Length: 161
Image (tube, rainbow, N blue to C red; front, side, top):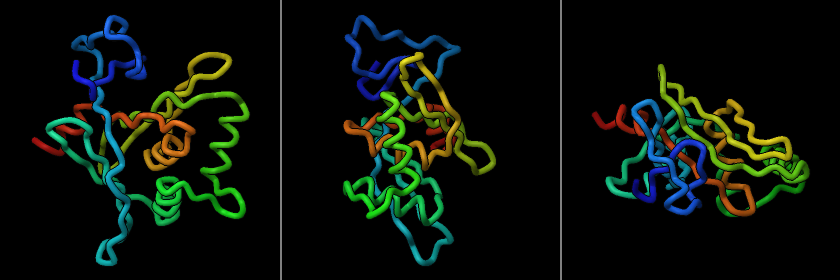
């Protein structure tokens, strides 16, 4: 398994002997980074561009609302508002509850909609929450150490077949 492949249930930081190789039923995830967030006046909505960290360096673009694009831009440059935005508030709540975001996972793409989950480690154990991809990416970026953004291989393949 290459560095950009992360087996379900792992963060990618485990020793090589601790990583479980995926079986046919498991999902293989690729590590993605935020390449940019852009707003083209000729397009109806801003786009988040995510790029695969390793070869073949595939990328996907996700349409988001203007507020989420602005929030992601602020997260990328480390800027906070005079009053907390929704994402800044959620980041503070997660920290105060002593939870950690393990990863945001892009699970599937259906009818033009990306479906994702936020994977958290809490005092009660692991929690996985359904989330909008844009919210998951913003919260992952806002962590003291950015949480990985993972994309299911089949999602990437659906754009490159």
